[in-house]
Image (cartoon, rainbow, N blue to C red; front, side, top):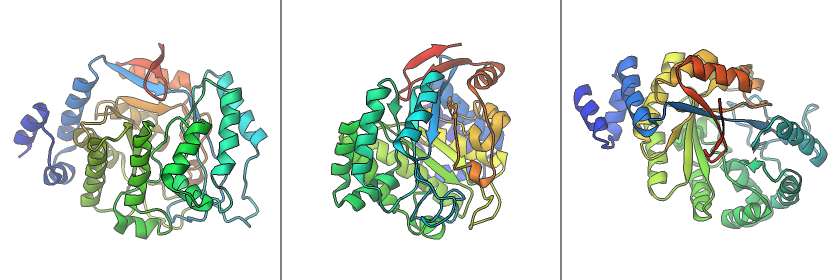
Length: 354
């Protein structure tokens, strides 16, 4: 079966769910990596690897969702609960701008008191002070939550946020887009259809988006496959996904507990992502959860992008995972793997070459 799939993939023909499940559960790791690497080279023949200089600003850790897999959230009454002031947020963005950064990834919890009217003046202020910074912020869960707090539709919320300065939407909060899994690990969070509805509304406004997958918690292989095909189908319906980012569940300090996926399991899922998602241009390696060495290997398993430098990262770090890479280290990593480093914008325009 592997040979017939190899011919099918080489011809650019999309595979089926059953074929994807076979690759995930039966194919050898190196064989799967070879198939994914062939697609990567076809889509990105220039032999470059991209990255963006960005910063995560977690504006609050107060969250009503209380996901079992999350070590970052706090209840409002917790002694270490916080909500950053506008001044504190601007100070963090100024540090990003001083280092030549171009992307702001602002995400937090589902704060019970924050509606759209909290973010509108904030985004306008960011655009006034830092007009070159791309506001790539707020997950679908946050957008759906603030729309509910503001008693408006998701479409209305997105229109107002876009007018205020929101440029693009990251795909956080996807976890596994199968409600059986979501009910077990994040029962208070939006359903997979609600997640996808935010992305559909964003596409109607021509807002770029990304998609993610957190795996290695409580899902079955069939559900990983279903997640990938649901993303593929959303993109085929007119989606605006510029990239897909799979990453592994980090169990430290969480209610859910358990163990994280191995490096080999991560590479298998990454490679399958590149094979299934042939209608999404970029696959991002997660050095934040895997570290530099596995991220470097991932460049031969379908990934063509190393994401952001992340001048600040708190959510994964709260689970005890603290890999850090600066711009110089990312450039060195890419060169040592035999590729050309390219600093990009959020929308994959070239910012600089090394």
